[in-house]
Length: 298
Image (cartoon, rainbow, N blue to C red; front, side, top):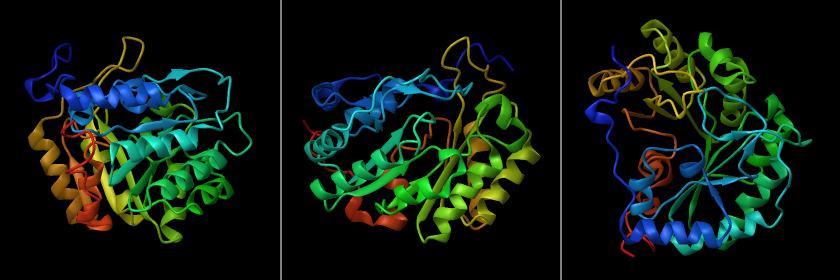
């Protein structure tokens, strides 16, 4: 398969329009980072045009060196304690009914940044009491006490991505572990939270490995699963092994639903936070859809 050129189904919307301009201005004014920019998400144009963005807290330098991710790796230089209030302000100004917050890994901090996570959730909740809050967190090295710090702030959706099949964890995620990620998700589910995870296809996984991964995720009673196409951000990152067709993505969706997963979003451009309000509608309700927010028709 020729992986040097993207297939037609991976064409994404270019950034444009008043909604995009309004979101970009807000991100700049509130001095925020977004995973949309830092991870080179192909859906940035579409999401920002509809007045939504995924805020990335705890800076934009990650202490981990995952070989699929475009976010800068290094040693973070600061901890911005004013960030939670600015995130809450941005969510309010966008008028979001469902917001998604993620972060870099901060392994150099004693709690992995969990206290900042909790402060951010509480600040967003205080300023936006009717907004559903979805968090996409790192694994906190598997320390349940730090995971509990986040859970005690009561997010509506708890997301942690396993990213790929078990065999490819080391080359893809380097410092992470498949069993540890699953244990974090099980812990959150055990505390009664709606849980979510995601995997990328096109990294060299075999069909039977995808099946096993979906079986594992279902056995952990995970509620929501996303599957999307891996895209190589730079020549220094892992190459794309194959382009997964829309038909195959549909087949994996059917397979996952057949295992009992509550929601499976599966497609080439699907990402954790892509239309996350729609992914979570079964658990948060139609009142939390971002069909009408402050910037969508700016």
